[in-house]
Image: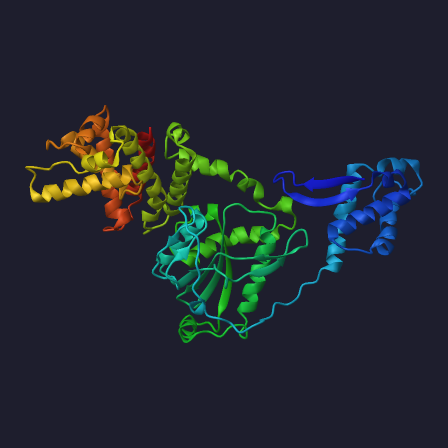
Length: 503
């Protein structure tokens, strides 16, 4: 008895497990029992021997081979353990068994419909890779996102002129659609977004970067849900939706499943959800027509990481990217991918592209200050107090306030590791060291001695540019960043600065 584990050739995922009793394959009768047990394991059924055994015998004796034979023929027995025999037998019998043992039930409403605006508040854990976005058209205060494509689609929906409202499908009350996996296991699928358009149509949206073998099954289940939800008896439209439906010439509520592959979204140049749905329709049709896993358009997407790497390296020098620490490289990849999502779409705000880099930019700024100044900082607490609070005699009141705030922020950075606006702090420190003639002791004297180095003025110019851009377009958003060429130009500078400052 041996343990057998079958894995998919391309993805490496386990597709079947069973115990094999090889002595059974030494005779025709034993082989029939062996294959019955194997089919029961694959189809998760029991008690099939009385039904399957005669069918398998007939298949082996009369159908599989060019010549008819019997289970007692030594030539047949010699072939029973060959892999091609098992593959043919599974390919024929597994679909037949599943076709006669799996039934599809009509989707029915199990409880009265609930409006999304009545969902209870819920908490989520946020990070740079899983941000929460502010949006004018969301029903909630924030839109939680799990990856770059969701961030891009959320931004798109917030600006699309045909979108009335949208929301992330998240939290304990989220919509979960049941479906059968390829292994015939009951599972639940959670689509990404709900969208309501101004013409009264509703979209259940799924964003997809890389497909897996259950994607078509999830899509079919979601389409069935949309068909049921579009029934006149499944949901009661709100007064606003009824009015919008009449204006559009329709009746009731129409739900549509919108499957958004990453590549299609990148190339789509329109600015409405209707245009996006039209662009994505062929991909969904292709997905649904694929009946077997190896027929899916997965193999193109298996190279997605190479495509993402190519997209990043086409914008940034590969030598700089490869020199970045892994956490900064991830931030750079995320920022460039978001830029690629937005660049073909009119009127997009590129501010969110830089959000992924904010933490990294501040971190390298802090690292440079610590490397240059920590060795100059006194060891004792009393000496540190004096060092960060030097005499400012002869300095006017306005300048005195500026210097004291700068020194206190440096103390927070060097002593307590919680400095504020670190890229701005680095700019101020470089500016004092290179341009300010005011003579001050303590930490300011250390700035003069430690921040005057070859390339310092070029670094000051870069840091000043980043800080001004950050304050204008990203942090305070005094202006909206809709110029894609400006965004591309500054994105290169920000990523190259990660390398320059972090060296």
